[in-house]
Amino acid sequence: MRLHYEVFKVTSAVGRQLFVYSAQPGTPGADALMLLRSLAGDTLTDYPRHRRRGAHPAH
Image (cartoon, rainbow, N blue to C red):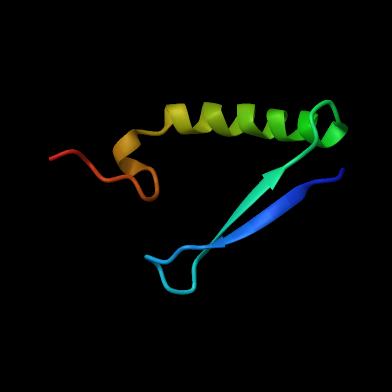
């Protein structure tokens, strides 16, 4: 599988980085990322928003 990635510094969190992966449309890599997205989406919708990492409850 071939993926392209970019790394971004998170300026508000010292030492943290954000990795963004992508693939050319129509490739096995793109299909794999779509599958991963669908699996992660199911997990996140079942997990209460206020318990997700980085989410803040409304005041």
